[in-house]
Length: 496
Image 1 (cartoon, rainbow, N blue to C red):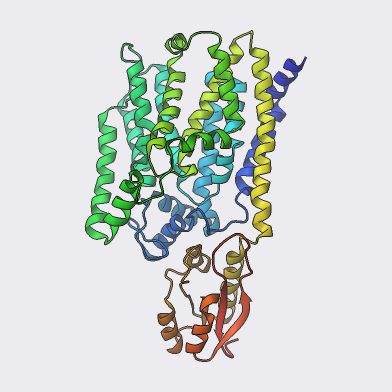
Image 2 (cartoon, rainbow, N blue to C red):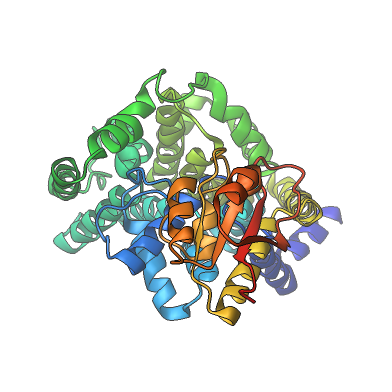
């Protein structure tokens, strides 16, 4: 029978290990070739680089000498990773990769223990085989790390609700620590993913004696006090911090003038698409369960832990949809609770004898389709990346460093007039500052440097001002789909 075949497929050990192996492959490869020229990756990467080379541990700047808009936790973690690996390319990506793997394992364990082995596999597969997770797993951004910290808080609430145990001081300290970490990853946006869900759950549980989703006031107030102290220090001691961080980064998200606003419904279609086919499976299972009873009766009889997953997921989606400034990856922290909710739906469906066979069939079909869909997306990202030479600046900069080490050159990099996509150059060349052309010329003519990395559009005025300069054969290749400028290497005559 087809149903028994689907059940055997989902329960087979080979299915699990193939799923796990392929998820790891997608996490590791989807962002190849690795570079920092898009998605603002250079800014968080530069924070850790600045910590190591200039000792700025609390407040950093961007490669273009503006105040860094993100809190420093991602930089701290990357710095630790660099201390272990001594390899920046790995150190910048390990926080996201480790976070992705940690969420995957936690989902598998939590769903399997609570809702059954098949539910665990589906939760695990749903997190690994979607377009957001694969993309963010090695992207140098704060999104995956933030998702892990929020997921740990939501999972702690879920475990308390399932066990029925009251919050003790140890739990509150854990919650305080996770909430403080979340604030130092991306600021107060963490509140958007938890508070509405906690309030909705409290409304439903107001007449019950079950465990509350509220961990107490002091973890929230204590973590906020620590974060406010950091913000106050920045305002007092870091010029430009108030305008760039407080007004633009934190408060500017709620303005329609600072950032480009998007409509309220922006996240919903994107989530349905990027979480497909799991979004379709969730809707299908919800419809099937609804046909077996009224919605109000279903909500009243729904287990408290599943109701919390609904509040947690939808609460974050609703609040983030009301924030005018939107970007697809910002909604990612709702994906892990959606995966756990899907596992709960599958687990409940398998307990109902009349729909058990269909649930196995739909789940197996979704897993196979997601495997192909996520793999196709990864290939669609990776193959053009190499064809269009998106790693051109990385390759060029590596060659420059090798030549500089070989001939003992002191060199600098000139800031491009077209600043789009140029921030990564400092990191590729491992330099702390860009130089304006006039200062680079002055330093060259005083014989303090032997080589210059310079944008192609500034070569003519530079050659007219530089003494004994020679354009080396080394230059970046043309890239078809990025707007970053091309660079050339200028050396002194007879310096080789």
